Image 1 (cartoon, rainbow, N blue to C red):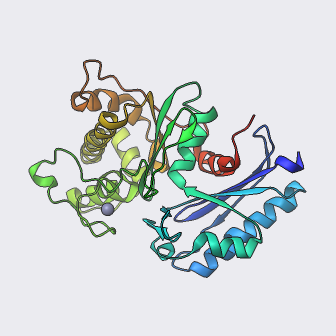
Image 2 (cartoon, rainbow, N blue to C red):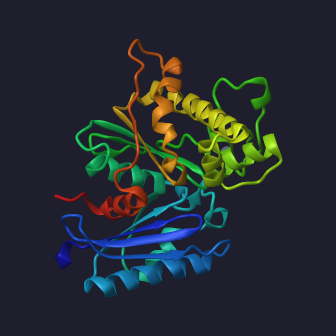
Length: 304
Ligand SMILES: [Zn+2]
């Protein structure tokens, strides 16, 4: 067991989650901590500490895989595209490897999530999965026949900074995005995107969960916000379906808990899908919040 123990770390915008997994995928130890914000050195320190805690709790040393915001540029090795912007341009892998004195494998957090759900989650037994993170940001990962699709730029599955398709008059150019563009999918369909849209419409700044709870109790403005959000999400998802044609879309991140999405999305996606059978299967994650951690651990090999 000790030879094949795998540590997975999911570094998010606000929290770090980690687990030490046995070869069969069982969790031997788990840990959570707040993610340091706007502090690169503290981020390195916090991830290293969590690995040490997990290995001490599990009583063994393992391989370490890390799911991170953004990705490593294959050309420069530096972080790109992280909405935890203090990581961008930094040699994160190099610095973490120096700290932990061993080789590491890192991948985009949405890629880790997609891998976990494709291997033994909601997508088990299917050929192709599009894993979507709707959280602080909007990410995505593509898995085909059990393997992540990534290319020369390290951005496979990144749909969050595509523009909103078929924008209506009041959706163009769209809100400014941290990436420098305007109207990115992320500015509409992430948690903060949904909250900002509700605030623009009502003047009220509320967390997404409160907006969802109000919608359930019949609040018309909250229902309208969720309705706009679902229509926009559907248009964005359809554009990925038209390129990748996945067997299954799995939603992850905080907004994947909005259960109405699984009811309303298939019918909203269908009119935008270029096929005579436009039905698209959209599922919640089997592993909930743990998918990112599991997928990160399996960057060193999936369970046998
Ligand atoms: Zn953007």
